[in-house]
Image 1 (tube, rainbow, N blue to C red):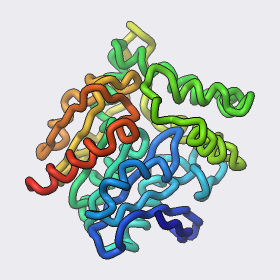
Image 2: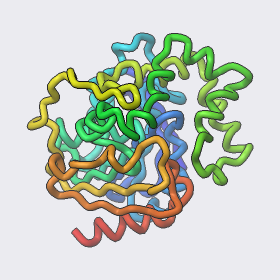
Image 3: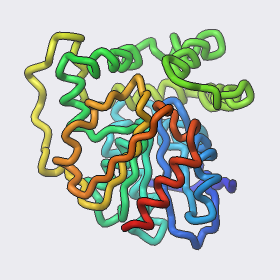
Length: 292
């Protein structure tokens, strides 16, 4: 792994990379509560094929973390990655997990000229996800934590006792045999950087997506510009079947927005499939790309 710090939109971003720079570029976008280093497990299986590039996204790790919820609107998060891709020979392959999937979808939808292939691992397109969260069913129940993370005192609550509650959130309902004490210490170092946890939570606060109360569907949702939210490039969705936070219904109807979609489900894996089954995820990616 190599590290560097670069300027994107006149701000400092920390980048990890694996593989030779003359390999095809693969941009890897992490989610909450991780950081760019979370891609190391998967990158070790892909570095011989790609130049794997994993930034600490805005608000995370060693990258720029401005104050203010407005600085974490999706358009600004996508703008950072547009600036990064423009330093490379575009179009490139883009992969996202969790919140990183939102940025990856944003790139594919709004700057299709920059994205040759889109790979999502347990992440969601905004329209199917909003529909599922608004229905008052299982996904609404599973997403109640979002309101907790949006609370004004969430950072103070989660950081207490050396981030004990954030660690509990991280571990809830998931298989975390991969999360050793040493790796947990690495996460705490990243969470403890000044202002970072508040910034990480601002991703949730800035999102316009609404969560219904269980069994109380929302009926007054704002109109989403469905026609502008299409993915035209080849799209691979890899899904850990045991995910407790994102349920299969959160991707129902995705074909409406991604005509060139391939779905691959992985049994005995959950939201943290990139750590649990990196070799299988890597083979899935390579098989899909080689078949195109």
